[in-house]
Amino acid sequence: MKSKPTLVQIIFFTLFIGLILLANNGIKTYLINNDIFDYNIHLTFKILSNCIFGVVSFLVAKKLDLIDVGGLSDRKPQKLVLIIFPLAFLVVLNVLFLDTIPNFTTLNISLLAIYCLSIGISEELSIRSVLLPLISKYFGNDRKAQIKAVLISSLIFGLLHLIKFDKGLYGEISQVFFATFIGLMFGYLLLVIKRIYPLIIIHAIIDFAAKLDAINKPVKKFVYDLMDLESAILTIVLTLPCLIYGIYILKKHVPIK
Image (cartoon, rainbow, N blue to C red; front, side, top):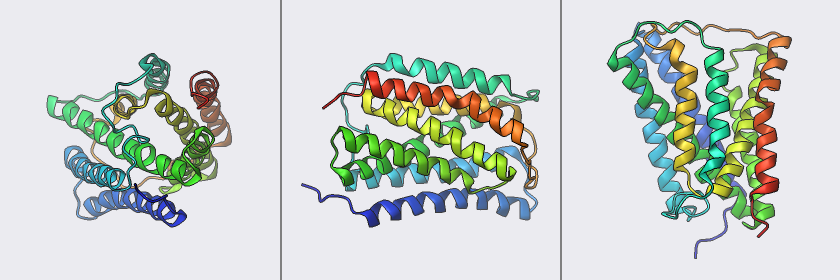
């Protein structure tokens, strides 16, 4: 029987996630500093980074006996109908805010699809399959422990979006809120569905819809796109249904025992 996770393990893995995200930003900086602006090259490097991160997260989950709680067992997924709302809502929301989609090739669209899948794998495995069950086991792994774990891991997920800090104060605050709302929804979905791969798939589709307008555009140097207060409030309000839906899942579908 594996020993109970320690606070040090939780903090260490949280810092590890932060370092990986910083490393991904560092890849862009390195390529730009070497005058490499090609869209496909940037995506290829990010795909490799995300895949390595996903493999490491899976190995950590296996080593620390988090396979079952983290949705990595071979059990049959439950209540898959619950993923319809987050998939439809977030895809439509992202599509509504797309700029004009530029011309693209089969290679471009394929790389974007693989890149978005790698994001889903790395983020879902690290946050939902490792960090969430680590925190849950730390508190005892019963229903209350799982609820606390979803809350804490979602807040960490939200705060990790501060790493870039390229949208100004209001923009960063809105990023924390919407990422936390989505994290709560996905966390409670995992408690009900019991498998991580449906979340990986919808995460990838949502990101794909959000990134279509950047396809095949040359990568630019870092530009600080400051968000005003009104836009930040609008972002929070538009993603508030994710929080409400997460609470609904908790109340109606997360088992008492």
